[in-house]
Length: 89
Image (cartoon, rainbow, N blue to C red; front, side):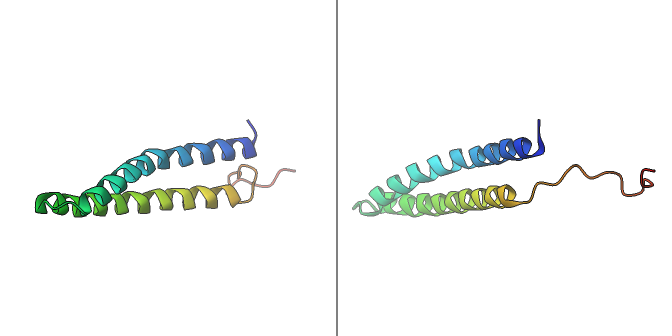
């Protein structure tokens, strides 16, 4: 496998790491917003906790995607040889 192909595969795998966090955050955001306007004070308290958890999930998802993007933009370099080895003659 070439170095650029390996980098692309790593980019895809890191991007897939953000998928569960994004899906859970989407569900908890919708549920938290739905319970926020309920008349029951317990539901309102649970909605606050739910929205805080969703915000943490969104932040994690964003950080993973930013890291994957930075990995994708790094220049492709050949595998580094042992720096202590003498140059070939």
